[in-house]
Image (cartoon, rainbow, N blue to C red; front, side):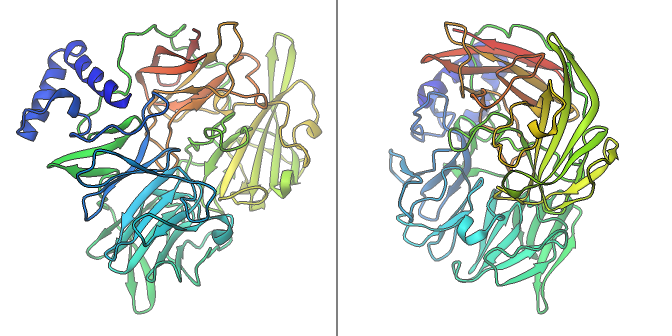
Length: 544
């Protein structure tokens, strides 16, 4: 399927884009110095990755070992590898055995000089194989504790006998294939060594976005800036660097041509065309001003103010988790949490599964066709609470610090926004209630990042009924790379629409532009063209 689409897209570039498409193809052919057929432009002669969905295989990590084998880490499909000279991809994936991959969302792949193969995941730690990928030793929740499980994109680096794993909670390094570890962390919040025997507080922030090596040491990018870490006789030391040079993510060179992993497979590194390029119906409405963007973000732009893209409101991460009641902001423990709007603190203490929680009833009241709704925001998993019940808080006031209390497997803030017809705190925060009844999608209440817009809409079957957990493909959201965007999901039976929109899904922080997006309805692919405008909401309806 991916191979057929590659041919189709290449032809469309030559016809729909006229001279620009032809010039691109000519430039690529000149670069190759070979009369390469159009169908090979996307992957330089590689066989297509096995695609069971028809929407392409999302490649998160791409690497090539010393034997010429190409390794592709994917979003939910594990690892595909192509031995040198082979025309068949082999699939390594998570199964019931203890020596399989720990998780099929693979974000990093690296190789050691003694045949070591490392991989890192989005949310379930990392692993090592010493037998060519036949079996794996994994470090997950039981070895790491409630931190260290989000590996940064391309976040494993190897030099000599030392392997570095960069995560959302710091760096772990080993010189003996994981028998012993050393942690590099920051000095903010409760210290966590994970599996390490020794820890050095040398990082400006534990939240690692990029990891690289140069001749002088280890390069690190965090929300607080770039550093170079150097091993001295006294241990690890860190120093800021104004500019850090990191290798491009997800790149390999085959036949002298650079290839990259993309949301729809392996393509030429110079290819910027969208995954889906076909005539289709436009969205039902053009972009308009959103109705209730009333609140600010709970995390400062100086920290990680991006929403986790893998586990959005109503999402199940492709059927792997329970339906989500809020949105996540992954940050190092101790990061300040800000009130999204003014109001009164109505709850401050342990809540569901023991998570330290703050709830605010806002001054804003939403008028609906059936009456009025009280608006609450709730902040979970904090390490410390800085307000108490009855306190009046201002917009942007620091109310707590990020942590991992309760049912959390990493340091993060879980934010909920409730629109309740009843002014009852018990209906908003209940330690025994896993699915609160009045949650709504926070992305329709908090301001989108500067220069971005919102896409929301419905997916309905032939009878006009909502299609639960349908996947919407085609939106491109490059940030944050630490939690990559693959597709949006419609709500299931535990999520709730906005009282004024009655939407089935909503995605904010989308870069302006025109997109072809699609979904499956009763086994039929349905496409729509949407145009995103900064600061506005684009409404789209999918119907057969």
